[in-house]
Image 1 (cartoon, rainbow, N blue to C red):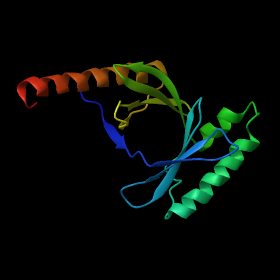
Image 2: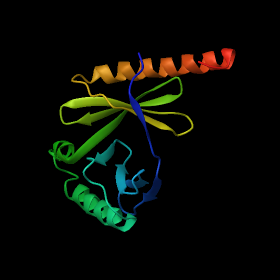
Image 3: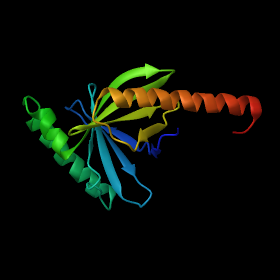
Image 4: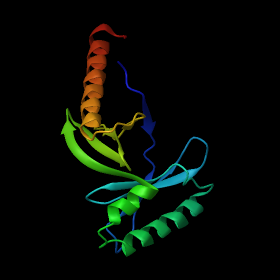
Length: 157
């Protein structure tokens, strides 16, 4: 059975000095901007309600989030604070040259897959267990590879 996924726009990345964070700015189909923060250990994406009309507004908001991250850097509550305002992404494994990421939103889990070309697919379903999304991501990858192989041989699916 096919899984509902959506393609995530890549955006463009800016590395800020004196921080371990990179900021990725993305313009969505409606013309609004949002951002994602990326470090070595994990990625952070504010909730959907944090959309901005201009790139400058998104840039100001990203700087505020970076300031917040600097202030809570050594806090034991850092992850729980970030979970309240956004989604955390952790790299899980590489499977058939695809990177599988585990997404955590408070008590829900989902998956995101990044292809070798840099395309990013995200599941639109959420699960209660952290193991379920990884298995679903592997199934999705296997299905996509099978479709690709069938198209290669037959020419259509």
